[in-house]
Length: 135
Image (cartoon, rainbow, N blue to C red; front, top):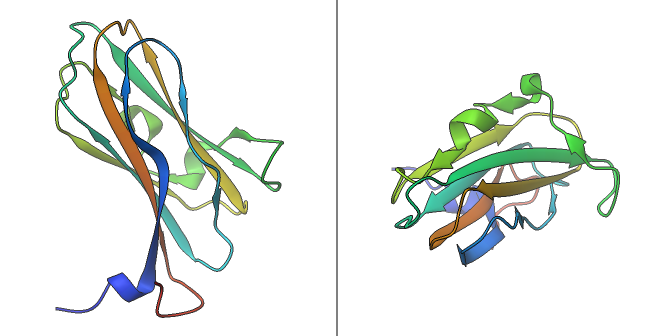
């Protein structure tokens, strides 16, 4: 088995949270400087609402605090639709890769029809570190 842990960095994007309404969970901005690859990993818990949907949006920018726009489909591995989920997806893990050229990215999960308990979380996995090992 080869070592992956020294070659990646993992950043909390959406800390584990229970969403109980339709408020969007806007993730922390991820700085890709010093890395050659990036994937987001989204995890759900037991989703209590019987008709909720959760739409994933990936955005990019050259600046950390402004100018975010939706990532083009050609700059993703997978799709936002495949990363999205519904009330029927208890305990699932989804992933969405980014291959664009902007330094900063941000993930947002927006629920609709949600009035129950929806535990979700997301992390960014940055790979191809220019400085190794990564802590």
